[in-house]
Length: 610
Image (tube, helix red, strand yellow):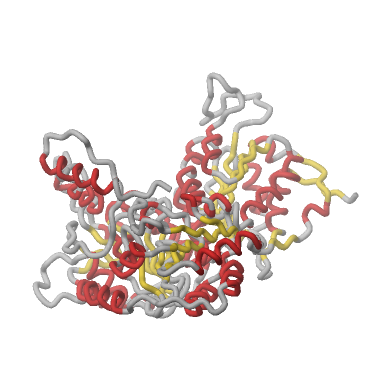
């Protein structure tokens, strides 16, 4: 056996650089790194030597650079991914939130946090967490519950098993998610005679799980018995590259499709079978169909509470649930009839089993009525041009400026709901929403990752002032790299979304908007000036007309382009949507809270527990 002597860190990067996808590209497109003690000496030296094969990108914050890596993988349908490395202690722990985001959304990312010395000679080292009852525990153990695979590398030869396991998880459609390889800092520099064959190029192909014949027969029989079926399209449709199969299935059998946040853009917004967004942030057309559906076919969905209206949406007493999902965990949820299979191949097999079965499509008037209600909300204002813009008007302005190559993205706050309801997606992956974890701070870093994944796309990021304040530092990274995308900052002077939730459950406006917080001076934050100080081109606009003019300029700008507009923190409509369970106090001195609790008790009785 021919061997090659390398340090563990050199062996890791050499192996990672040799892993390919079936499109002939390296599966790992690069490594995001903030160096410190714990990774700079071993892994940093190894990465410096392989820049041509595995480029290293310097971020500003461990969490946000991980968000960029995750967005990169999401936008490419999990066909490629990135790694992220940090020092030990606070640097590592900063990435735990991002790991949770990737875990919830089933997205691949490789975390390589530095760790303490395996030989324990200098214990305790700087930034080491000491557990009084477990000498082997370190800060990196926090990654365990938010990783799909976790390993601690305490000897160089452990990479021979750990690395293939890591890549298997990241490339497996059913188990896909974050992997953490906690890398002891002394081990990174230790040498071992590795088999040369270990570094041979390997192709990881998209595994397409085929449906079990018995499950297929049961699901087909259930659908054949349906009178009013509906398809719930989730993110798995995109990750299986099954949008064409979904379109063909829906058309052949005339079954309406409704879209989750992750599934949105699976069909063009104006496709005859696309009845729009579903659930708490859904349309009246989609929710009306779901309320009466007797068979719900979920395709690649986790059945999150926002999708199901906390399981109050499906009101047909004898309704049946089918879950076509590559992951058995999701396929068995809530008593569903499982069809554990790849979304594309599962739909094609199911369509063949339903040959000749055509349902009565719902009335297209439901969809037309929805757009008659909401299109005016998105129109440019005709009245007082000095009135604060609404979120719906901002969405409309960006929609009018969008083209075929535009990707809109967001993650938390008000805009995810408005975009789900109002945005008209024209092609797959033109809508990028992180709403599994709904993590504030994902937006700007996520926009950077999307643009790195698809440089030809026109990326528009929606973010509120609250999220901007939480995490904006990768704006500087984008400026340094010359990566161009547009950020629309809607400034409602606080956490407007949660303020409305507070009010909607009978509470007093408290601690969400700056106006209702215990502060001495109301802030006057100049977001445009702040963005400019980090290298962005920026402008503050005073109206929707000025926003449209600013948007028209974006294609001629290199680097991040930030447009700031003041908006109202209050909604002027309550269209679409369905109930969402949030705990309301049973006892309160406020009559409005007691009324909200009474309504809550009524709504809870509509929930289907299985």
